[in-house]
Image (tube, rainbow over all chains, first blue to last red; front, side):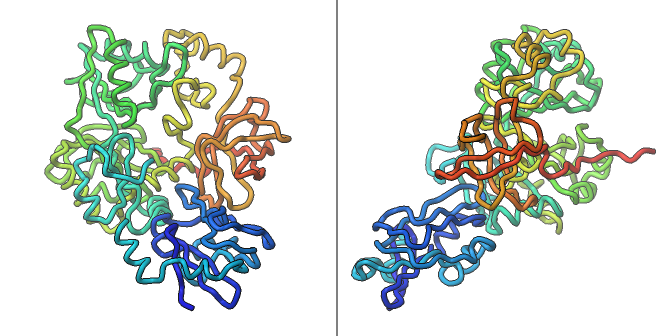
Length: 123
Length: 381
């Protein structure tokens, strides 16, 4: 399945039951240089829309909300030492967390790449 | 700082150039200002630490105090500040604090005495953008009739900062590289008249150049054409001044904090400590003698999570102060902050913690500046 996007500028990619989540290139561009990412504990259950992570840029802290509900099964430990991965590779090496999706149809409800591109043009 | 330039914002004479350079513009102190250019804040910060950067600081307030002679103008300013302006030499510059009657800080500002005896009696002021109206009203209300405030709103201000700044400016104003730190005077840049001081807000060597607003773009383009120079936005200006341990008005100092609490006693001249005669002298002299209740300190955090303005400073779970500025220091390579703590906890090396999102992050009181200043010192002849 292809990557889906939320209105809060997160991307979600399903791999079986597991959804890989990060922030979009647009989001990292808006944030500027990322200096720290606070990630949730593995095992934590997140409701859709709950705070999943916090991204700190040089200037400010921004919350990242869970675009779907699920249980955290992994976080990207590489961001602890190299938060700039979020700027360099937001939709690949700079991923944030993996959720075991409670309801995969929630992913279907998000925007596809074309819809997200159109959404960005309205901002 | 709102990320929205659509309100009724003022622009500096370089607004068009900022857009041409791809700046992201934000609202700051009523102005649309560049917060960063496409390279980003960390690259801009490092540019100033290693080469040179050009800042548009035309939003700041430029004005003159004008009196019949230096003694009169200096005495009028001394009645409002704790500085020694009687003793300020021709063409010399000093940092000072405009004080409330309770010894709080109305604003912090730079004061420069004219370098020529021909127009002595004039002191040039540079004040914070967000405090212009307050400051000018305050001067109007408290100056004696012999001294008046003359606004210079038709002037722009650029700052060229960094280890390469002197070499760059010497290509346009050969004499400028000989200016001492905190000295100033009139100059001709290429063919354009201006006023140059050797000062800044980054901890690096550098210059601030004041010119008619109509010439500002020509100055900026000439400096940006130099290979060592890149444009720098407000984001890096903030991280540079934080590492340099310099206060930002409205955050680290305000009308409630005194110069002693703010650890700005260097701005209280020796003669004036004894003599008083400035607003709030009673409080300030008492705090100098007995120590203030709270003090501004630097803090270095363990780990990588920054602490921001407003975060609580704690010891054993007890709230002993608040962060007033904080972020990641690109040159330090760590999160750093400044804030106020009860004086009992202000000694360098004291272990404290800072509350961030429900966690207590370990932090150590650290002498400022976090990065050594590299101000120009004239070699002995």
